[in-house]
Image (cartoon, rainbow, N blue to C red; front, side, top):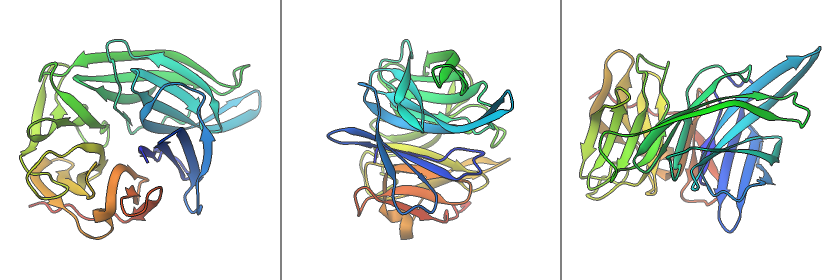
Length: 294
């Protein structure tokens, strides 16, 4: 599984996944289902990550609800489609971002489908997209007012971002956290449009506990608990995060269910979900462990 997403402000408890193999498939389910529904996506783009929004709109006495999925592509596009119809895709060029590797919705209530926002990351660039959708368009679905803002992160053109976490409005932070792939394992926080601060750096892989590079692929922030992460190595780790105290640089590697996690991670407001590294194509759901404060 390439990516998992559970939308904020979703009282229907939907969960979505992206599978990449010989073919690219979009998976959807309600929490409690025993299996996913699988569908083809009508796009030639190769997706690296997805994020989902729950949208409900009314017009002339009628109400429609659906999930809006935004996919981040190798080709540097943000492709938008409905969970109910992956066959109708609206593709949007991200300009100077030649490849989009990670996307994270800002955790706000976008139920009306207006001015939805997400952070995007790829190569040495970090950006933000804003867009609106109309579920009552004559064609069945329309994306309006799509805008993207992309900038080079302060480290320069040689840096590769592997994962981004959208944290705005969960804490006092108003910029995202992101992981960097390089000679050392780093997690940083953007502090302005041109600056960043380092919150973690180590020559050890936080997922394995041994020396070496960690290819982190997903970051999830759980309020007043921790910034949780998974990667290409099996395992789950977190940095303690306190609402008014910021992030502590001490990393915790977890045992239990989390030790089986790999590739993709999501949080539904009460439970963590991850791809089971011991059973391909299966998800694990478990209560988030506590990230210790010291």
